[in-house]
Length: 129
Image (cartoon, rainbow, N blue to C red; front, side):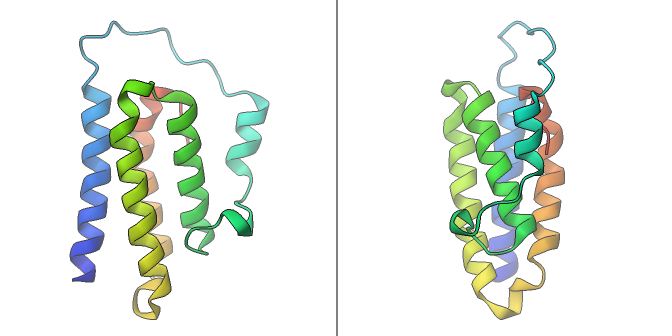
């Protein structure tokens, strides 16, 4: 059951990324995204405050915060629904997994894989994590 939950969360995230990165094919290509500002770069490297932590696992919480910032700041509003849904599913699933001693140890790896899978598609919006 746990493996299915992991697999489902990961598959949903990947499908959300691939749908939105290819779903705008009728929109003309924009110029290359502007380089990240110093503030954005600093935000990426900052760790999540304990009060904002979802899982208590730094790799997961930092990725969730970076992904959420990216969606809020860079993804066009019309496309955010799918990304927001994926983010909520990640948060819910990962919070549950982090609270289970049997799955907590695998969480850094799960979150790193999700981050790597999301990184390429999110570059289309000028995001990097």
